[in-house]
Length: 239
Image (cartoon, rainbow, N blue to C red; front, top):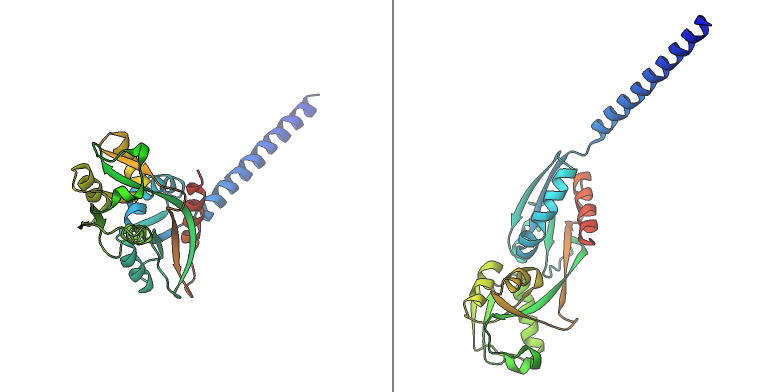
């Protein structure tokens, strides 16, 4: 009986050792397989200011061994840097036609009309005719937001009384808040200010949306870290 009990004890100890060895092996494998590397990202302003901060907080926690370097500029500048292979990936809100890039959409951005909070436009009876001969606040040429504003004015045959050009989304929002004019801007930018009663917004119809896209240089092998980054970005954008 004692010999039998001893054999059972030895067998249990053996199973425990094997289990411990398997666990340790798996942990070592996972550690060796952890994704490492670095990514240079170029992002246009709306993406860089309103999407990337939250996403990067999530991404870095999940992939702590990937180093991220980010440059924020307008769409035109990001495309130029990517074409010169100074970036691994570009995240833009405007159009960037070039045979040098692979492009894929990852987020639909709604554009809204932003007005001073105590504006004199009746939002209930709003029509585009009320936007004639007004001062418009615009981003600089090369910006995706400026590109969209130009398209909006052309399509609706609106001629601004004058245009004030500013170099960031924040500056545009502040100009509207201070009653300098009106603008077309991303709802991502406008909503926090509208909730704080700093500005008013009017939703436009479904035609006034744009797509954020990522760009990769063609004929350049995409690193594993960059592929993981883009996959996580696409999944995050669906949340």
